[in-house]
Length: 233
Image (cartoon, rainbow, N blue to C red; front, side, top):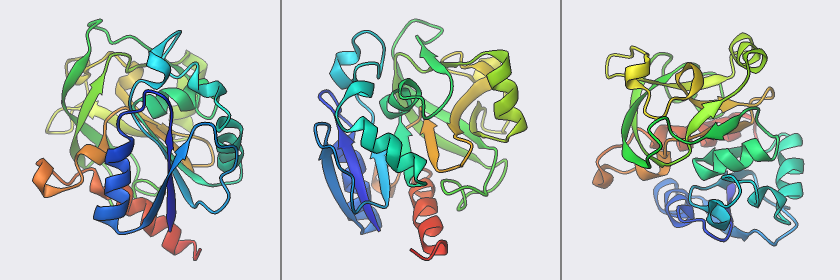
């Protein structure tokens, strides 16, 4: 399986994602500079975290117009697997591959911490190695992670079972007190209707090796591999 890690000016989690794919998973991976216009030969894309274009205007708003993005959109529309992490999630929202928008954190402060997440589904390309209602712990590091959408969109996300992760406590209880940024419905990660595009604010690539203090993020990457193998590609 061959991964591509898309790099924008200001990306700073690209090396982490590259390391997880190459060293931890043992699969082929390339950096893809934002000025590239073709994605031929890739099986999955990772849009990493960071501060693309300095987060000017809105997070992800300028990156959405990079030369690579039409190819990313086409790749996703063709069924390719796309994982957007933190700033990557913000870019996917701006590009229209996922619904909603990001606001500044409720506290108006940058948050660097660990959070508990409840797994809502395990029948997707990103969660098949997890259990429904399992609680995992991942790092967060963002200033604009307050996911927002209107009531119609939220109803659709719920009805179509497209919410993959929610913020919770260690026992799996959800509530505003366990929500670090104010995201509507405690949302930490969502997928598109086809289930091949995931946007999430927490960082699984920072929690995929025991030496980093946890392996919960590894299951998300392992799920991608399992999905690819089951598809017989």
